[in-house]
Image (cartoon, rainbow, N blue to C red; front, side):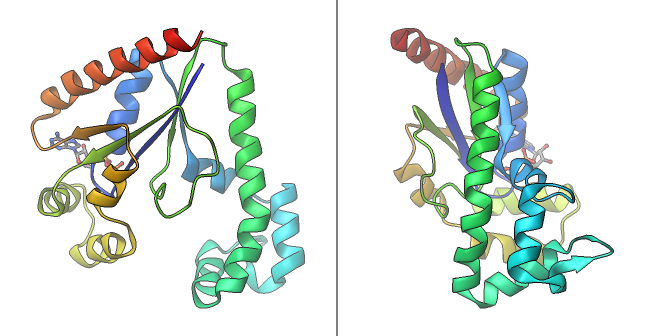
Length: 199
Ligand code: ADP
């Protein structure tokens, strides 16, 4: 089994790359989706958050994620408190995916904020997708995001250079989608080799 992290800035093409890996046979998961699942209404995560932060973080009985985000953005101690609840649950959710997967799987976890979130897992391999901010902006505008939304998100994320510093493999996604596909296929070969060597 090979445990891989896939990161990249917003609009770099992480989801596109993740989809290609899935088509090639990887087990692909997304840390943002796991993070949402562990605090859904009715989960122990949800109960713990309401117990710690009170009803202010609820809206129509569900977690008001925007209110919670604003609260922890303003108060670092609250952020730590929230992370103490969510991080173990996210780790457990990922561990369950690993447990359920065949023993020779290549498991790829998309983690947008890998640099920012410190390493919670031990990855066998880290991949980052790099593209100039200019090209990412262009692609995200086409996808329907506004320029201010894009700039705001980019400002809170680390840079390609910071992501490249922690990566074993850098995928440059500055050409066509067909070029990206053949680049990802090459990386897939490397991952398969590495997985075989581990056995
Ligand atoms: P992320 O998940 O990193 O935010 P996406 O995979 O959603 O990025 O890609 C952002 C946008 O750019 C999507 O609309 C995607 O279809 C497009 N895209 C990705 N790679 C390329 C490429 N090589 N050429 C043109 N458009 C691309």
